[in-house]
Length: 112
Length: 114
Image 1 (cartoon, helix red, strand yellow):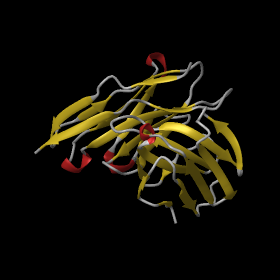
Image 2 (cartoon, rainbow over the protein chains, first blue to last red):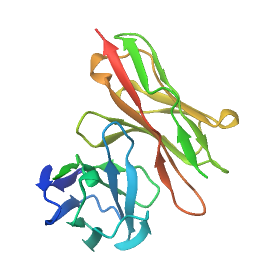
Image 3 (cartoon, each protein chain N blue to C red):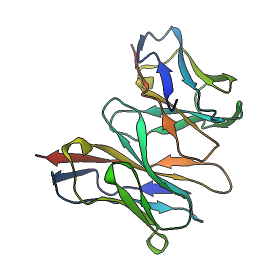
């Protein structure tokens, strides 16, 4: 299994909603990442988990809250988002930090 | 600070023609270097990577890239482009010491003419 699975594929939410994005991999990778990608832009790193511990937070607003319940799962909890947070949210994993990344197909998020 | 530059925002080639996508990086040491491809609305797929050793690396789908330390470049090449190669291509750099960074270039959109 060489897949990173992200759910949901599409999400529309209001600014007062709370929602969560989910990511799962069964490759035994110990590093997992959240990236945000706006249209026609490169992915921007948000968070890195290494061995289930948050190792990098790229000054992301607190309305985004990551969680790594175990080595296979990565969540991104969303609360009180703004319309400018609308983007493609990509999850990735790698065997260890710095190695090649395996990406999921992303969650297209629209904030109304 | 570390950075990755892809000078070509768009490139158009005819099917069967050769392709070269440029990538330059700025980093004090030799980083890990990657090329990824992204189709619309999809995640990124790794084409190839360079960590050390032979400076010419082979990847999937017939792509290759050459690391040139003197030019701080890692250009992607393909001898004969197929229509299915039309996509967005990202060069990426991962730092090998100090503060960890995994940075993507701004991307090059490839259009293939039939």
